[in-house]
Length: 514
Image 1 (tube, rainbow, N blue to C red):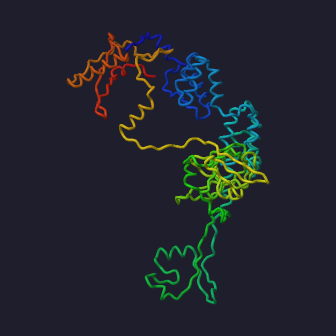
Image 2 (image 1 turned 60 degrees about the vertical axis):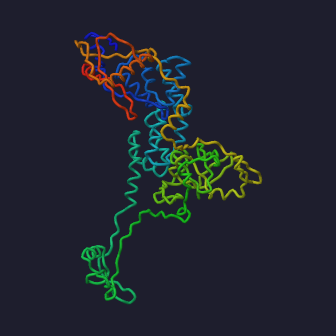
Image 3 (image 1 turned 180 degrees about the vertical axis):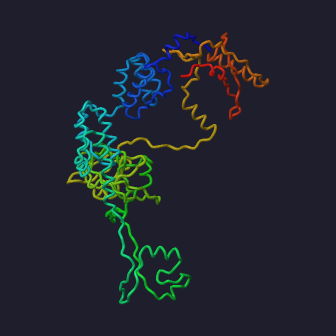
């Protein structure tokens, strides 16, 4: 083990940051895997660099160290072809590779941004566009945000005269809550107890309070006696009961069509087979892959795709879709008479929003029945039909591959992995030299940390020597005359072999911790 000794003055200089605060804060550096917008990652990196006074030549390698997944593979190719770029070029290339394709016409995206789902989803999408749109006046931001809300919400917000974007967003969240509270209204009041004529007889009317009292006392609802088994044969009095009913659907009732909404289990779960028919669909301002499913009754679109269509979304709280296995899935809403196109052939149909597992859209028998006679060739994955006195032929497209399940046990799995990754060699030697070597900072005046080795049984001693010889042969360790030392111990694994562990507790107690 090699240590780089530093004097007290140099150590203090490295520790002092801006405004006299400690530079070695316990801050977690952000990571990026290429699945989201890189702009927040770059912004957090720059904040970290300013707070830690990171040198310019160290910024790229520090950020590259925290890249994961496809982002790490992208940087490996970039470094191999161009070398280590500057931070400015690294930020530009990372944004071009993983950023959303809205840089060429950001104001056009603002004009097309419309409120289709919840207000929170619309605000999130609006702020994502705003961060890339360049400098805009506060009044322009407010006008663009209100215009995308759509009526009647945009009118409610505009009447309040918001002077900032934060105020406009707050009003947009509050208006639907106020509207819901006003439409609910107070509970209906019922008349007090009295008499009413029913079938020529004068009977007494029970109020809800009286009903509750009789239920609590175990009395009959038709007379003042206790209710017991067989009491209805001797009870001769007649009451009228008023029961409060609550309209939870706000005047929206399910039609017979909406009560029969059904989707197949394979479609909602996203299970793919090679015989499925999938087509490219232009829905609103996005292109999705739709499954033609004769096991589903209607047309459905995933919630993720519905947010970006730009179509008029009608929220519903009373809709549910039945899955073929008997489950019921809540449907947030519907696109009424939505326009979509297949190979420039326009169609119109209702599309219901549903949390789909693997498909962007599902076209069911409700739409397939409008096409007339269809000739399907599942061997060639094509379907033909007549439309406007001409023949239309569609070919299935390849969607993303589905998941494969395979049951393996013990040695079979190990042999399969070894056969699949035969080109992966066992590492030999130490890692290559880096631009910055690792160093351990000890407290000033600390003598060399040397701990005597443990006493081992002969079996463990032989195993320890065997592992040391193997690692020395591979170049992973080497003999050292350093005054520092740390004891090692062996821990038995689940498979019966031994794991070599080094005890650095004594060294860690004397390290400088930021």
